[in-house]
Amino acid sequence: MKKITNLCVLCLLFFATTLQAMEPEKVLSVERQTETMAKKEQTVNGEEYKKFRFGGYGEMVAKFMNYGTNRFYGGVDNSDHRNTISIPRFVLAFDYKFNSKWVLGAEIEFESGGVGIETELENSENGEYETEMEKGGEVALEQFHITRLIHPVFNVRAGHLIVPVGLTNAHHEPINFFGTSRPEGETTIIPSTWHETGLEFFGSFGKRYARFDYQAMVVAGLNADGFGRDNWVAGGKQGLFEADNFTSPAYVARLDYKGLPGLRIGASFYYCRDVTANADKKYKYSSVGASALKIYSADAQFRNKYLTIRGNIIYGDLENSSAISKITLSNNSNYYHGAMRNIAQNALCYGLEAGINLSAFFPKEKKCPVIYPYARYEYYNPQEEAEGSAMIEKRCQVSKWTVGLNWFALPNLVVKADYMTRKIGTNKVFGSTKYNNENEFAIGIAYVGWFVKK
Image (cartoon, rainbow, N blue to C red):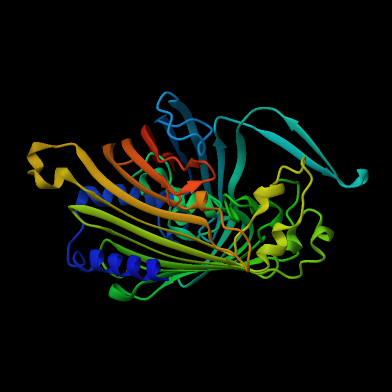
């Protein structure tokens, strides 16, 4: 709790020093691009388009690492330099207004270049898993929903929805974070981008300095089969089979304050009464009992002419984590098994990043490029605290510093470069070896925008 308290105090100090500043036109243009892509920004009566629009976003990243695939043993081996290049995601988005009250929205995401593993649960064959390997990637329906606009204060949306837990899920487009990759802490302990099927109520209320947006959702809950040591509940996102289990739905609530220019403060809560009820083969957990999952998050962003500051914290609590860890899954289940099932009761991540707009310090007639040098600190641990006497694996505890540059060639097109150093565990001896500190340099390019509006 001391870590959480210190982080909250630090965030408040940062925001308190900048609340009176006004946003410039150039920064607003970047912000508006992201808001039109983020369907959860609650501009329910906005007129960005009359009938339909088509667009999307995408990212390309190259990474140069001073560590190999064997990350935790043998000490730092500087001769093992591993480099990768990838297209983390390419997303196509489409919105269509049937009329002024009914709106269709959809997004299709291509991860890592294409389709990956196909898995089917054959109930006619005693519940056997059938898997076909095609290629290492994924095509996913990230969003598909129909919205009924009723009033700015109250509207309804049904379909496949973004779960707005944390800073990145609620604002996941690549110009909403500085790094070449999404913040590591959030994407480690919870799904990202997190999307589930269900029902949502949303709207905006208040005026001027007391303006709020809210979301309340009922969606498919997480599946305990996917929980594990290294990623806590992130692997529990459903969608592996033709239909999702809805035996124990999840309830999600989010509230955002937007009463001051450039400032957004948000908080969210996730609750699933029994994650074991959503398992592929529920009978395996008959000895565990109902296991509730609760996730709390808070985040904030401030933008003015000179700087952008973002901060976030996520804390999660899983009941009966020790008992769930003891349930053995078959090796061909595509889920964790054996020691990797060492699930902690509590997980924690937090981070803070700040970037300075160098172009704001020069006269407008100079037409300086929009460049943001930035720094980010993250702490995350999918095994922050165990239940009872369960073992804690210190290699899961990570502190990470990142420094870099973001060049906005256009308000919706950014070139990124950053250097990261990751400290694993406490650097104490594990057996006869030490945990390795890891260093990484990355470059990337990303865009977001609507190509057609009518």
